[in-house]
Length: 160
Length: 328
Image 1 (cartoon, rainbow over the protein chains, first blue to last red):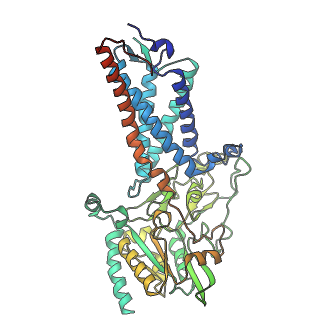
Image 2 (image 1 turned 120 degrees about the horizontal axis):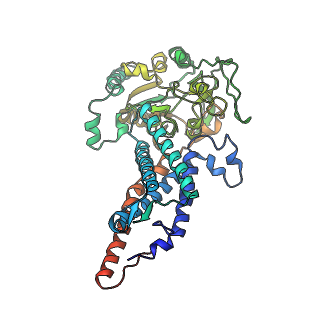
Image 3 (image 1 turned 45 degrees about the horizontal axis):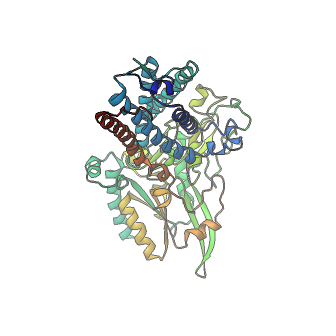
């Protein structure tokens, strides 16, 4: 028996208001994440009224952590919901599989970097750079594939 | 003097233990001892400093081979606001921190308790126990060793200068025209290499002492395992009715200054500015994010629990004959 879910979410699990909030969260994660590199001041972005915080490293650092907590909560919620309740009527789309792998990579490298930031963790330069590049590459992949998915109305799951 | 020689000998043996990879570190960590207990710290007793500058000269001599070798002309950088930082023609400047001068003497005259003090203070990187320059470098050019020493690897550094921005004392100094950025996109990204005191990590790794300590004729500095240096600093401060700086600043550093004059008084009187760090308060800004690290553990559990709760609630409703709600 089909549920109201499909029509309300145009194919995906997230209803529109939640999806809008999720996209906003991704925007702040991308901004605060890219803000870890000293680019926003150099390229005048932080001069835009209201965007000065983009050049405040400790502010973007904190926002990135807080946003990561929210993102992990959302990811865990939908992952659990999919595994426990939705698998009989939905399957992962190719788009969802790609984005899932990207997101898992982002989360794994992100968690390692959070651990590294505590006192007493001494990673070699090589490992830090590897995690940096992998995190950045996965983010770029996620955003690019996501932009295409947004434009072509893709969803992570589809009704079987 | 014999008391300080025996103290130096004792602490020197401590350097060898702490300066190389401590085999017992894992066991100590497992036993719950804080990581910083394995760090090497330095006590700088400014009552002993006469401002002779031997430490400054020794630092330059010992570390000169690590100094920048910029190639001119520098590639043009975009946009125009990106500043060139060129000290290659001013390598002799030693009254502030520069890419070629990692230690300098800060001079100050203050009055405290009716007495005038002329003090000279060797200043360099504080070697924080959880250094933001290491932890927040977006590239990974900076690293910290298990003995607490932090060092910028100038072979990897792109000169982004974030390390300087996040350092409470603005310690790292940039030299344009040298480094990896020249091989990437020199016009658009990077701006040289950052330099700062590396505690003569290479000498320490082989059981030696930092050059500034070896050169000092007045035994201003004492280096050893952090717990012992902290105890020594507190003891010395008690002896002279003095004050300690560096134990708690920025969450803790491995450079402890002892002064007969409050550091607030010194900070108000010293010449501060680019390359001339303050002696004021420094909040532990790494802790701001680190303190919500637990949220990163709890959040996914909360998310999963919410989903499970929904599922079981829906299953109970289905079991009681109601159609399960599929809304969020």
